[in-house]
Picture (cartoon, rainbow, N blue to C red):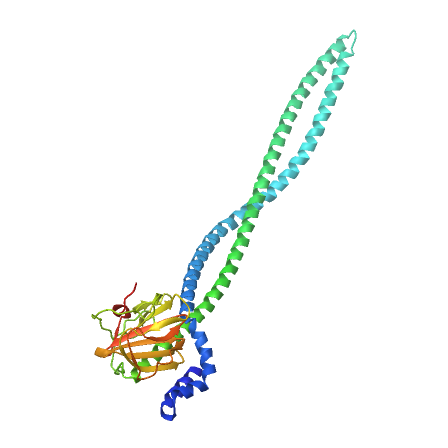
Length: 386
């Protein structure tokens, strides 16, 4: 609403007084708007990169969650089986421990009996026939009990080995159960991360939407300014074929190719942030026409130069484009300079300028546009780039 009111004030101002006077009254408001617009393009680039990074991270988390879900499902099935085995092993250990105690007692009893019999046999002197018979009976009993002792000893050793194996099995089972619990914990942690990233993604996407809307308003503002100056014809209300990408599309601007000699660039040292022509929005997958180029100066307070001899037909402040200068040249050629932080004192409407004259200064970026006979020209066809 604030931007609509400002636009109306500027339009009405042409019939009620100086535009400059109207602008002064709303200068504080415009400064706030301008401060937000300064970082629009860089913010757009950062958000686009962050959103693409988030999308890759979310795909990675989804893949890991899917794998963990499958593994957890298999582990849960094993868990029931191993829990039963765990309980059985615990019971077996208790039984074997009790049996070990019983076997030890039985072994001690047998050894004690054997020792007693040996003493009895060795103590006999001048044995009678009956004593000899008793001795044979005792020897037979001794052999039988020696065999039983060996059997008990063997069973005891086997029991000890079985007990040892059962304990190892129990330790392994406990380790598997702990691993299962860790995987459950990891799954919950990843779900929390995903929820936070989704929330961050949605927030950044809303911010991206606002930024895209601001850029669209900026482009519309420049077109209206040019239309009022009769540099561009207002498009007729006719059906125009527009290529659709998703749910949104934009009309392509009328363009022509410049074939004349090249001239100096508006900035001495710069990098190109955005080129002329249609570019595809990385998030919405739609084509957006760009009718100008965006240059970033490599030094603060950089001079902006007039690229060809001509006459100033517009020099004013606008809410979306900051200071704007339009210069008319020979052969129906116009150059437009937007986002100037300062205008040179002598830059006024009607002032004749020679090639290379300073028209203002910029800190962060310069939007440079060229038109000829109602058509847009790629500014890089007109200027020399080092």
